[in-house]
Amino acid sequence: MDKKKKKISERTRTLFLFTLPSVVMYTVFFTVTMAIGIYYSFTDWNGISASYKIIGIGNYIKALMDRKFQAALKFNFVYTFLFVLILIVISLLVAICLNNLTKTSTIFRSIYFLPAVLSMVTVGLIWNELFYRALPVIGKALNIGWLSNSLLGNKTTAMFGILIVNLWQGCSIPIVLFLAGLQSVPSELYEAATIDGANRWDKFKSITFPFLIPVLNMVIITQVKAGLTIFDYIMAMTNGGPGGATQAVGILIYNQAMKGNAYSQSVAESMILFVIVAFGAAVTLKMTKNKQVGD
Image 1 (tube, rainbow, N blue to C red):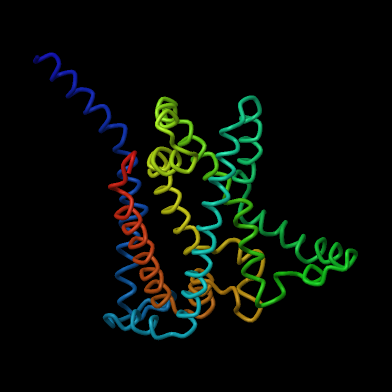
Image 2: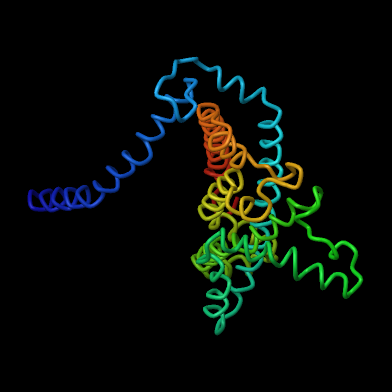
């Protein structure tokens, strides 16, 4: 018994030593820097001067009352809702199709994962050329009105142009995750359900979906975060235009901090966005944590 306890203690110590560097790096590069950011959000520091003063929650009130920030938040919410909803549907459908393939699933899985290894800025610049140069030429040649002009140059369609690019690259990892979740479902459960007379929808609802909940939680949380903090695609493709139609919170924060010298207000806006992301993650986990197979 003593030898077993000693062995467990040595294993725990080894695991602790292996995880210690990660904990230290996380503390230094996230917790400490975030604490510094929170501190500056209660000041009037412009990011340049050596002197500043504490102004309390003034930056938060100013940010929440700012119409540009409200419009940017609205854009982020609408964009994130559409992005996450469409991404989950596409990724899950593709994963189900790949799961039904036997010999070629590995090849197709590699193909679908390929966009994930590319830089978001690179992808944005490539699609920017397609939207402005290639697609309008095709639209005019085929006499397709809506395709004859760039989607990014229209206030109404610019967001959807960015959404298409984000989905093209963003579905890669969720497809692989959903596929792994589908392959983890024991085949015996499907066989038992078939004997009980369950149809495909019943099997998906009562067997497949509960097994996919951990994956679904991860996908929703990470993609909600990605949608609410979108920056690279917009910066590379529209820079917030046309006419501010795609000015997300990240673009607004960047412009205020780097161009407007409103550093403390931009940090306050970042903290507000952080709280929104954390709240969304908590709600997602709360809604799905009690789902069990057969429910």
